[in-house]
Length: 609
Ligand code: ASP
Image (cartoon, rainbow, N blue to C red):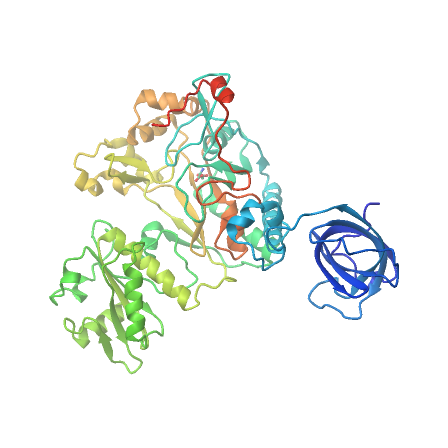
């Protein structure tokens, strides 16, 4: 037997047993005639004791870090026990060993707090993966994978693979394309998601499908994006929105239990998209804490159901508020004692280019009930009190107010809320709060092209009550400035996002399954009949052969893992990730290909573009 035990396995019960271990050398510590070596494998670390007194022929001197050893010896009780590791009560008195392979000095130390920077660790990712910290993440990922499969299998879902070489039909992100040698001049695309395939599987009768699958999107990368990422992709036939919400909130709860031993027994909160934007300025609000926005002023056509609060600030002659499209406030608990330095720092924070505000107004609602603000010149104490009351502020709170154009101001308010939540420790890593965001608009207006684009994707069905509005109206936008008045602007989608702690972890929709409605959708997005047939003829065709009502969802697997693992970066949970420029620095990919390959593909490069 190559090894009788792993390096994480032996305890005091094995004392005096003869064992054989194999693994990597973590550390070598020499004390005169004895040498201690920590031997590491995937399962843990076991201390080896090389003693010349025991066997003078055992020469541990040549052994270095990351050497691969096979060691035979007897389990011994340690005199100096290490409570920090599970095998800390024992050691192996080495009787014989084989150096299975040597290692040159690794470029960084392979331990939890390594001295290797991110770039170096990515270049030598195969060494980085030996580190406990990374291994723990991959173990968590595997646990999420297994729990997902268990749950979906128990619920009758079938894992069906779909192709990676498909046709380019960009809508949203750019496609990665792959030239076809056998069909010169033609290209495959890598799927952004298996969306149309899973819908076709519904037409074929596989009414519960899933896949844990790679998706490819050629987007400009932000810190938490990867050009290839993994989704838990699911689809069901003969369902309504409610069926999907029930099925998949139970999936996430099942994962919580299996992976984190969390009993998430409460039902998942639900909120309309409009309410999320109104209360949090964001369609994926972190509801672990309150601090909701007070909308003092806003463009009425954005929130048609909402009453104006403008009377609270109007008429004071304060130009910043008077001239702004949107004014929003939030009451930060317990911060009325902020110093001038602290409020100045916050003002600088909102002025950073990422936030892009011109300034910050604040009102201190002192613990003694008095007020002090940066706008005392314009507002009486009475007025400040009324704003504070409307913002739900209590004595001791600091009220922060932002003013500017709607979109930017709302976004800034949302960012400021999250920042203050973080500073106050309200975004607890070990607290998990799920939320369904519902009733998204079906369309978004693309200003540059003066047309509608699908907010989710072109296969999402409108709410049943809005189908008539969609069919009965011409999608053309006559007057760009008035696009919000177009009937299409008010159409709601039968779509849902699942949000966890302020991150969108999943999204999906009930789909269109009637050919005519799908054609109307394509038309609304500006596709003429020819383009519809060229890009999606297969789907429109399939809808003529008895397509059942269906809907589905996809979860961002990498992100779900990173949140459960308490990390901001999905990279930490991917064995071989790409860097921020989409490069694999270990493989040094992407890379040029040789002239012969290009010739075979009939591709000539034009460096001038
Ligand atoms: N395919 C969609 C996406 O990747 C998810 C879905 O609608 O099921 O966002």
